[in-house]
Image 1: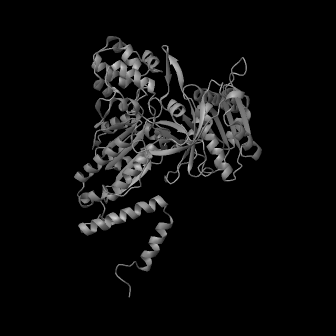
Image 2 (image 1 turned 90 degrees about the vertical axis):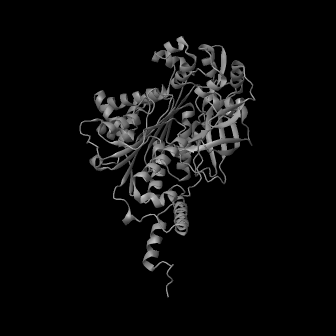
Image 3 (image 1 turned 30 degrees about the vertical axis):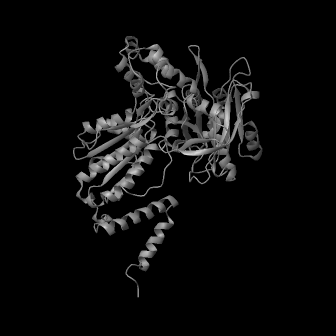
Length: 591
């Protein structure tokens, strides 16, 4: 006789069909979810409602992302909302049907801002629609917006701010005020989700019995900026010559038993220590005791430790200067803040000591700490293929050293790695997913890869993956640096890839080896006709490196090539490039 707690044949088949299509991570989540239901059943007979009993007012979660951060937050929110027993759907803004907008009862948006206040490509079309006259009235819609951005840009979180403002203009009611987040977004996103769940509980009777369950969903431990993984350094090798002007290191880190996975094209976030000479200068300037206990982020730590690895002291931004001015009321600083061009010039290369020196005023150490940003992680493109290097991740780091106002300056992370870290040490890291710079789903598609200096790192990862999977698809690398004999990063590896047929073409530009400087965009232009033919045959075009000069120059050169080879006007070339972007065949990883 069949026992009442066993599944019948039909139920068993349904379960088997479900689990066969789930990943390991999803199975872990389901296991924890069912355990939560069982525990809740023991304590309270009111289970989360089934699909048939769920609220008829569905919740729509939308995301607009460039690298994938907004998408991950949206997925986390989606899981938590489902666990409340509510209907929910999740979509990228590029897949969302605009005619559904007027029907929405609950609309939650997570969106990033790309570059100087621009909407990410995924959000562009919907962004233009919502700003236009065809956007419907949303008087029956309740909404919330989480905006991601970077405070080093003037138009911080502008895309999210624009969406929030427009939703309000169209009559929608905000459940929560807009939340904005800098690059260290994880904690803010989690708090935003928690506040949103509380509001949903207030507005939906159906979630009362299952609210505690939704807040106790077992989740896989995540390594991020707030919770880094301490990876052992397996190898550290300088890959430029000792007399090169460039100081570049190849670093290999262990991921063994960490559970961390990544894809070619992703980045590593490293949590650094600030340069010791700058820490010492600040303590001396502040005339304070390095061992004095200060309060920072609700925690009690020494002043020395706060300056060493808790606050940002090597770079400044407008917000820091504005907060500083509110305290010191320095007239010269007030004038600087009114002049965008001069402010941008000042911020380039200035640090916290410069601020104290250049714009003095009355403030104590605790006030000074309060104006500084949290020390953020530095991101580096991964230079290893995950399948070719199981349990390891490789990165390529150029040391940043320069002089300003007769004082030597060092980059926070690059000098930390080059000067303080050795084989056997441990480095605080996490994986930063970058969906905007992965290999094509169709691995047979041709690749055109353009990179200068350490911008070549992800292409090593790409080619290692293709080699591991025995893919000999067409690939073409354009690499640039200063000098052939001193700065040809991974030269032997590129030659091996050429010999094996993994890399079909290699064009290099070494700017200081001749009187007239030659850069990657010049090599691209010399091969314009063939480059265009590759694009016409479905090639994916990648650019990695400096966003202010190299990336812009390469993009302008590509537009010239398209215009020349097609015999079209500049605006038509722009349309061609825009089509490549929409097809996700023009990909950028710039910094």
